[in-house]
Length: 307
Ligand code: GUN
Image 1 (tube, rainbow, N blue to C red):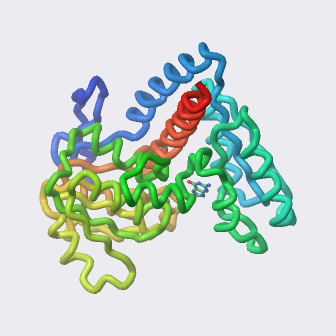
Image 2: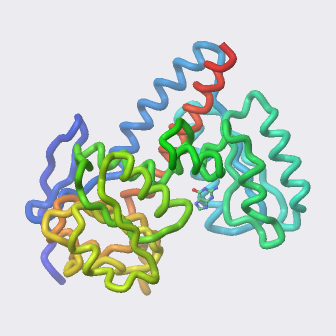
Image 3: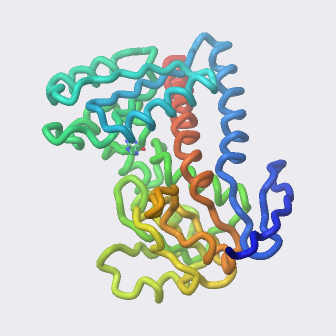
């Protein structure tokens, strides 16, 4: 067993950060989430004082066990921060037409400011049809084509929660992206592509790597920032990281022993990186936090448009 690194603490922005005596600063997603959720709670109270309670509808079709946990956590997070939330659960044999009708009703419902259909949906339902049926004004997942287009063109819109959470983590360590080389590993519509656009918007030079990238290590070794979002263990190892780089780990995987882990070889990479997110306790909690932020924002925008 290698000796455990002693942990010391210091404060950034009033937040306690756990920092190894040697190696990378650990960016704690739980602590940052607590801070941001406290801000959400205050803004929710201010809206409630004006007679508006931000509301999120979470729709789950089928019995996917992981999805059941995710939606429960989302609804609980809403309750903890004072938002109204409804969880609508439907059998796996719900028709696409019936789901589209439910979305239409939620689009019209003034007590609902955000609508989230948990993915994946059963195979007989076209997920893109469902996402495009959600009103862009209530698209708090940021998956609608209108939201993607807004992000691409720098217009106001909802940002997908996971990469948005990553941006908040970089902000929390005062990482100035201007002129930095950022390498994003993964090109999903939910994380990789929006992540690259957000980094570009902050004036980073961005490279997107994926399964067909010829020499991943040659790319990552040039990076000042690496975001790993592939969904595969040990995609990023110590020998692939330039000393002092910042590493964000979006992966959610299991070791053969069943332990939760990310895409990054955490113990190896923390020795060379200047800052790194752990799994669990890193990007994961930030995703739900940014869902709360988006829902609150949707309610604030709706209240302004009706003012
Ligand atoms: N399934 C896995 N992650 C997500 C998410 O962030 N939003 C939705 N709607 N479904 C998911």
